[in-house]
Image 1 (cartoon, rainbow, N blue to C red):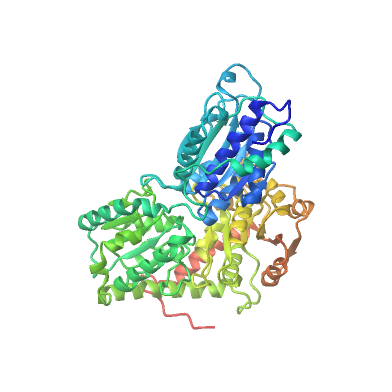
Image 2 (spheres, rainbow, N blue to C red):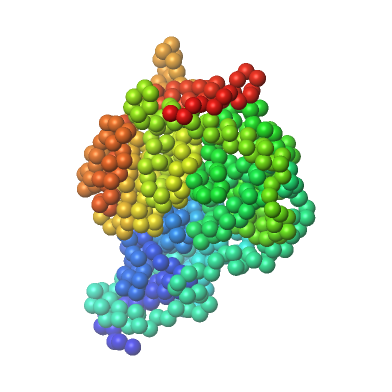
Amino acid sequence: MSPIPTGSPPAAEANLRAALTLLRALRGCGLRQLVLCPGSRSGPLAVAAALLEPSGLVLSTALDERSAAFFALGLGRGDGVAAAVVTTSGTAVANLLPAAVEADYSAIPLLLLTADRPVQLKGKGANQTVNQEQFLSRSCRRLLQGHPSGLSAMEPEAIGLLACSAWEAAQGLDPLRPAGPVHLNLPFAEPLHLGAEGLIALAGELQRLVPTPPGCAGLDQPPPAAQRRGALALAQARELSTELRFDLDAPGVIVAGPWRGDRAGFSAFTRTLALWCRRTGWPLLADGLSWLRGRPGLEAIGGYDLFLDDLGAVPPVDQVLRLGPLPASRRLQRWLSATQGLQLLISEGDDRPLDPLGTAQRQWGCGLVAWSESLSDQLAADSPAPSSLEQGAQWRAIEARTQQGLDQCLSPGGPSGPTPLSEPAVARQLSRWLPEGVALMLASSSPVRDWESFADPLAPPRRLYGFRGASGIDGTLSLACGLAQSEGSLVLLTGDLALLHDANGWLWQRQLRGRLTVVLIQNGGGGIFEQLTIRPGAAAEPWLDFERLFAMPQPVDPLDLAAAHGVPVRRLSALGDLGQALTWAEPFPLAVIELRTDRRSDAALRQHLRQSLLQGLFGPDRRMNPPIPPR
């Protein structure tokens, strides 16, 4: 052992050894990325992270704990592997809550490592000592704590077990709980820090001698949750297929919500879903966040949010296979509520209730692939029944007419000249102009809803992200930066208020390992609120100031804010320039393209599109009108 210079505090050395043991254990479990926030109490964790960086730990730093947590959340959503966030004690921990809430509801792995005071300082009025162990408890899979006197009071083997327990809970390796956030609250006793001379002397020894504790997985991949659930899933699938039997030779519908599984499981999921579609002939209504639109062999229907305004216009069905969380479309939700018969909801590794409508007879959380294996004999038939083919053709005919109508209204260069710049038109054209495979994130509020209704379902397929667990706008830009680092390249479609709400997200541009293009819809406030029934007319009471109470336009120009952080910006005046602007943004790690729209006009356009499309689709007798001639 290397001699430590005289005067180096043994307690400070023990803190560093304990912190390094913990992080090495997490590395052994599969931790790849760590986001560090500044602080003194968390100093041992900061130094330990720096010591592990040369061996492959990707270390990012952030001033803002809220932004750091959302950045880590984006990393975890992108590759399915939990990233760790390190903060100091006190109110720093409270800033982690919004990201923890979203991680909880969206089943995204996330590790929250917070330094704390030892128990002997709790409740004594000591500075920066708060009940931080309670701040995140309602949103986390587990709260795990170091020894009350300090992490250094624990044996290395106990620290390793603590790390592995946290990792397994975050990754969803417990067969009964999905992936999600885990809080590791870690007391550190003073003195906290070695001097510079002591650190230099100790660093080499620690990097060589602190082993990865036994019982953790290798560094390449954490063990997939599916392996831990396999035996349980097969037994339950057989029981379920006996209890609830779909008639695969009768008409039905498949409804796919947002995809919450990981990338590794998506290919098997789509192959199994394609088998269902071929065997049954059932139409597939695919949420914009399902990753299924545009996939070959699926013929996903995307216009249901428009034509389901008339619930009697589509063929009735007696069985619905629902996949994943409920889609955002209120019209689809009303249709599901009005549909009689069997509804089965299958989620991917999440057994928590996901049926707010209360219409599913059963929910099963072990995934479509596992359930379909128990039905292999029924799925092996050659072709769908004639009645199913007929009803599927009716659904697809309505979808084709809907998309034709949207093309006439929203495509540039139509009979009436260039299409006016509007949010529905941005969604439709961006879905077509982005190359296949380029990942896209949709901010909550209007962008995700417009994509659901107006994007082209036949556009190139891509991974499409939207954080609809809690549907907040808290960390929009930081989330996108984390996703961009995970994906390599990403486009974010967002409104101005969501972007301003996460102004510290611009700070990521100087260390971003990836490329992010922000397409900003600037409409001077909260455009989503223009669709509220409370929107006043000219004769409204003077106290009902809609702009002040709801829309809340801000005087700050987001482009000025981005430019102040060194981010290149471009403002467009025509929708047709968007394709060229996307090419302009490609060389930059972070760039912004602004499109200015009018939120009141856009709200009126959405209503007009719904009314005109229904009028064009169905006559008074609810029979479909003749096809629209091609342009």
